[in-house]
Length: 189
Image (cartoon, rainbow, N blue to C red; front, side, top):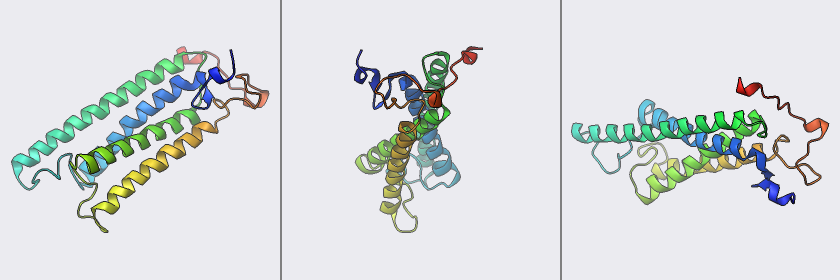
């Protein structure tokens, strides 16, 4: 088998389950951060706040319901990410790299920010990050999108530079002594 067919997005193919778990988990955690910090703690917006009058009790209740449904979605992504992570950790061929996991979570979180920002803020115009914030709504929406780019690119760089999942300089999947990762099956206990 060629070295190229043993790679996935420039990484060892064996890293795929761990990266996928981290990305899905990151989507869920990014959504929770958005919903808990922006919707509930800072109260800069609700899910449908650009389409409703949040000073009206009935419309505020609709927004709270929409926020709750949003949280159900983020919970499902988080649970799916945890299930994928447990499955990945049970496989002896998957490198047990926390660095790859954390980088992948940031890739997922950044992807969430980009998709949510483009779709909900700009295409559907359901809400803005902080409509009455200093500098205007567009500044906060663009900042949210830029945070997505930074998280996504930064996470990918962290994963790509992890020796546990990056292809060796010889083009194969073998590890040198300096790259050796203990893959004993203590994870299945």
